[in-house]
Amino acid sequence: MTEHELMVCRCEEVTFEEITETAYKHGCSARELKLRTRAGMGYCGGRTCRPLVDKITRDLEKKGQRNVTLKYQPPIRPISFGDLGGEPNE
View (cartoon, rainbow, N blue to C red):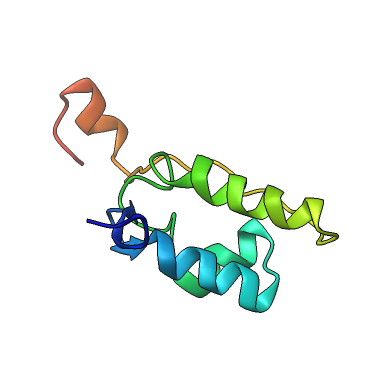
């Protein structure tokens, strides 16, 4: 496996090559990179790939690009208070 085949975002199957090519081609901020590649939009909410995506955009910032970092968003799903307390739903 080469560096370019390295899977950065396992949830969305985004490779290092895809992220770097997109970042340098479009001069993306972290948010734009996330929207263009879907890196960080999978089940884990970016907890696995966010540091690398942010690093790639920081490298661009050093070259004069503006950087807007991604936010953390834990994976959640709504549940009722009855489910929490063990009471049946009414």
